[in-house]
Picture 1: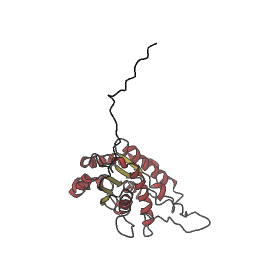
Picture 2: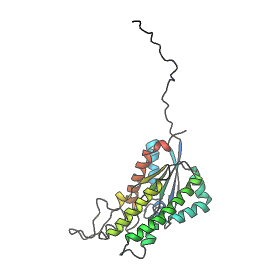
Picture 3: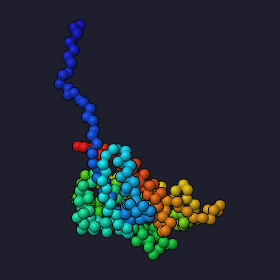
Picture 4: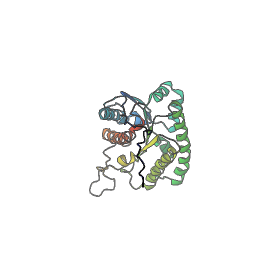
Length: 257
């Protein structure tokens, strides 16, 4: 039997690993409600936004510029209106490598405003469908100014849980609202969900109102003046959640093309 000669295939392309280069400058644009504005932040420097900036700059040794377009009390429709009307927000979105957003809490609070002690899950379900429409419209508007940058959107949390633990329908409503946000963003690409409810609603050091050992009611992550917004510890917890997600998707914003 004659052995056939072996010829090396010289037509295969040689592959060389290309090292990814980190951008020298990165822009993070934050938009949303009071959590983005930073209500409750004792340093008055913008809540979670500067904390995220600091961590990303240290982690990746890059210059991080931030734009904070948070306004206390804004609903999803009010945020969208600002995007449409304000050129500075449009420019901030266009410049963004990554966008963060807090939205939805005020939409839900408007529904609960007069019925906090008599929450109707059925009404919340109905309202959530409207919220889904409004959130969809907001995201589409943002995408008009920046179609590519990843958007990292936070859940809402239940600031009433520690103080009113028996209001289980309220917690059900919060859970439903967050599920609506997650369902809404599935229709878009490059949008990511961050769960801050897991760190804000019931922190490990919290003391429930019906705690038999101690009668003190406490959520150590909430601003003591309103027991609603985060304090500095709360904003750090929120920032940590954002940073974890933003780092996980670094391939989508950190490197030069």
